[in-house]
Image 1 (cartoon, rainbow, N blue to C red):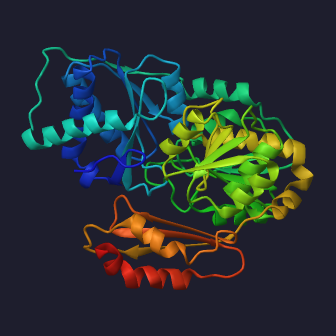
Image 2 (cartoon, rainbow, N blue to C red):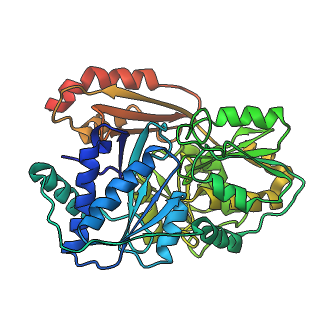
Image 3 (tube, rainbow, N blue to C red):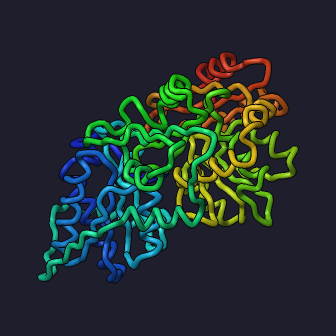
Length: 441
């Protein structure tokens, strides 16, 4: 049974991984992991703004307390804020209850270690084993000692104080619209941007059911329309748990993450000894071309923010990024952080505001086509063989093709970049027609 994906797990609340039975089993798995590992410090739990988060928090904390372990309740907090709290506290493991950019009807779990980084694969496999064991036996041994619950106070203020050491936002000539997606960045943005006249915050009145609803990082077109309508210069949209930030410009439109990370490095907003940037393999080919001209090395990893973080640290890169709007700043955070990305964006405006549109238009960005091809009941589909077969169809100077098998769905995902000539139909047809023959070769 596969439980953990690239970043925890999630599903519709009340079903699959978010059923009462599974949440109970997950809590048992966490407690078993701590008890067997003789980890004595307390567990910390945070959550985003979904109504189901409180219920999940109660189930998990009850089981962990029943097994004699203490729990700290952080309440509503962004994922990067949660990571920051763990980094500066004494906790055994962090449980962030969130489904990120998914609808409010979903929920999920992200796990952190005691340093504030995402929990490693090996630890997740142990927890997975304990979860499955409980699902098979349905037995929890009472340790004859009930754990304690402590509700933490002023958690958001602790994170905000950290943000203020990075950059203090002041009134400027440009106007910015912040879309909090009715998510866990709402309270942070309200407190941090208080009394800053040129910044306005929208979608911050969360009610448990409106997280990501027609707003946020998955709806940048909606934000762009509001930026234009109300004559703002720029806008930023977070997702439900605040680890993603998508930027828009009144003049330019939706700003590609790949272009923005280039400008961060070009203007020394992020810098370091090694001129290395890490991104996932599905980044736009334009990023490769732009960084090459600047003398930077681009390292491309498999999809997943943990892969980006780990490779950024290992290679001592100046920044890690996912095209979806996830930015990792290794000197400032232990995880992707949308709000720190906003602070760096404001720093960037201070040095190139008048030239931002010109700068963005100068940078390369290839046309992107993406799609899915069902692989049905083919059990032993050989992805690597498929990639080799199709590679001869690609001109690496002007095109880029990434083919990867979905972790959860019976499909292969296609990401294709081209400069002038679009060969996606030919590629898709070739793969579809040869699935069987490629698999059997």
